[in-house]
Image 1 (cartoon, rainbow, N blue to C red):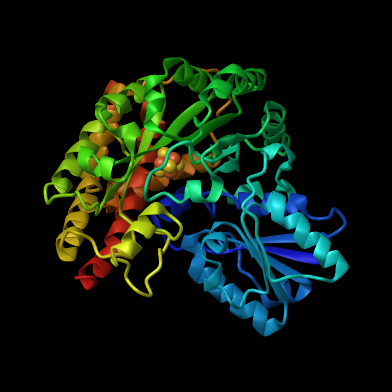
Image 2: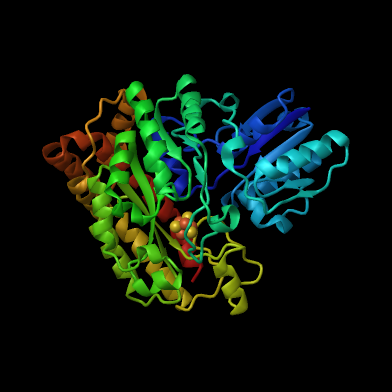
Length: 503
Ligand code: SF4
């Protein structure tokens, strides 16, 4: 059996980092972790190839080579999925799909030959058995949430590390919380299921022995879902592994804001080499937080919590949402003020969406507020909305535009970088972080684009100067943030015509 694993293309979006990646000469931010894991679950004797459309083109001869094309995707890749499917059908090659997009909206893909939904550890073996017997069904699904102990190490040999800025590992699935708009718990449940310490170390070894040095994204939606296990066994083992190898990786992950309440956990994460954590802040409005059931964020000084995490050497990037029923017209200025004061440099502000399967979707359906024929695009920043908001739509879009254009204008953005440096206290580790040629090239390019060509160049030079004088050891971070800022500005300036078109 020859199987071609295809990872669809991402549109140009906030998290694609497309405009920033050009500076370091890589093609994509993250590898297709799900497909690489599925590849490791397939029969050993099968011939396997993987094409990530974010890295290279899919040619007709690639499709013709395969007996089967397997696709995994998230909602944001929907358009590319449709194109791949049409090509496979034209060339007469059977298709099989799995992953979050297909699990949440299988009826959107009537043209797919087989759907292997929910968790691959449960449904893929049934598919493979039926394939061997010649009794294939169209849909394989199960609500079972299996333990992760049988999940194999991804088949890293199918990709080239050179194409990616970051490598990825999954440690756990599931989140104990219940935010109304979130589909993570619909997909993975509330009880966090974790890999064993041995598995975690094997995953690190797999990357290390293949030569990866640099950022590793632990892709869990809430890494701290089981704090006790992390503190007792996982983080101490990671610390030991990292110390012995002189810190070859720096980890980034996602967590809930209650990380700030656990100093021991933050200390251990810092010691293990964590450098950044994405947190769903959502909104400074208590009413809106209660409305969406984000009780972790209620009754706390959110800015103080963010700064505390920064004090423990962890950069905080944050998710923010506007469009809650409780949002009043003041929410836009409040979001801007919050983001500026918090020193959250990478602030992903999105419009509220109601993905299929979430409690929010069900509520809006009952209230007859879902827009017919509009499904969640998977991109919170593309100015689409799939329900009728309580706030006047034009005011909501105008307010949203005001937030994203304000927080990413050079003066405000660089101000935030300096605010972050004021709080950031990373450990001085003996890291083997090397001065790579690509970083030198990135620095030179940044000097040219941001320091000569860009309108906000005066603010850029001010940032570099102030960093050199006040926080010289953060100079690489200052340049990195400046490059990210350019990406974010391009994303939001590209959106402007759509914003106006949406009025
Ligand atoms: S804390 Fe994050 S992952 Fe957990 S339910 Fe809320 S939004 Fe989803």
